[in-house]
Image 1 (tube, rainbow, N blue to C red):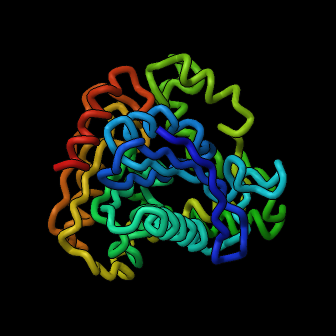
Image 2 (image 1 turned 90 degrees about the vertical axis):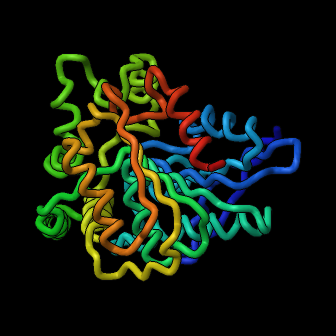
Length: 303
């Protein structure tokens, strides 16, 4: 396999989006584009990218704005340059267009995890005609207070500035996840694999607190993900598959997770399925037992 780093310039502001691509030595069967979650970056997806590549697929992942190496300086981690939540979605489409240009005529599967799962569903609103399949992993369930959280972030920004890092907003976004497994140790809400959790917590490019600007984007992504108005549904037969762990604090509970699936059906997508993995937590790709998840994802892509 071949490993390649690339840079794509955002159409929004020219920000350099740092990307990583794995390509098989043989003629590839398709493309899988991965969209990572909040406060992490592409490096954490390399084992899964290598698995996909070994099975004949081009795997691509980029550091989203305000993440990893897609920043102008270290203090920009968690700062998005944008207040609308649109730039980070359009950036993903730009990466899709880049990899389709490198490998024309190959089918594209888009995979979004956690915050990335909201980004890929907002991506659907304008760009569902660019992809052939979608996988939604570790999906945050709808929160009726998303609009209130946006207003709170705006208020804090007014008084403290857009680069302020708010503990209050941090708790609203991820605090309940940590609280759910507090006895198991810090970071245990992510995965049963303690080594993975330790690596996440010790990595300076992971686990930091978003700026107020970052949280404003995050809450707007939540708001727009579950807002029916705006979904154009250009590709109604697009196969969409949800996956999550039954012990994932982010999905809240099984009923809310199933409602997320029903939401996309209600919008107009005809082929939406899902699988809940008993006893697994938030990061399915990093869980003990991830081999089953890897195999299931591959089966969905090849079905």
